[in-house]
Length: 315
Image (cartoon, rainbow, N blue to C red):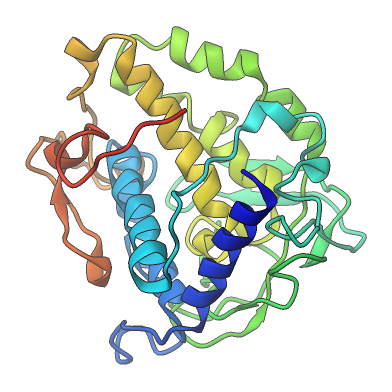
């Protein structure tokens, strides 16, 4: 993207952050903007859209609706960009996305000494230890340096340990946007070989979906940015979330197109978080509940980027 295109994009995000929320105040009292509306829906759906078959179709619809809001409500003329992970895997802070310039998504968080983050996964015995990087505080420089995050965290294991939760996550809890960008994790897990392995070694949707779990591409992308992006529930409060999920969608699309006759509408697995509690296998009729953001769609409607509500391709 040119510098002019980058500024047009971030201006549209700032516009969305300035428009009043449409979420019912009785349900999401802390929402102050249209940007917050997207975060609120993700909070509400988190345990139904992760570690299960809905991860990819639900987030495809969610990311597209965000792009639609930027275009239809804030006059943005472009498209939702993706974060090409391996291109800057060795130095994400030096990339155009995170260099802290006026043309970026702002930079790393302020350097605050901190130790490992032990992150427990809700409803399971699984935990992971995330090594500290060089940030941890409020983001520095660029268009989102003074941004306020209004929602979350939750009082829940796995919702940004070390922060005081706000109950449901829907209450008003203003604070700065934090990041802790980790180049060591990026260079190890978001390189070209990692993407090639995920696509080339996955013969079924279930296989491919599992390559996104930690230390796979989806989870690690969140942890590389760190800070708010570590939060399973409220991570869409960081504008970088949508770049990351556009890339997740791009890699899924590439995997689908390797054998389109078989994979375009292949969707297997259950619909609860780690299948807790046990749930039926997903079908094409499964509804991707998008709340107040727009029209919820069936899984079958969102399996192709060239069908249903969509009409887009990736470069």
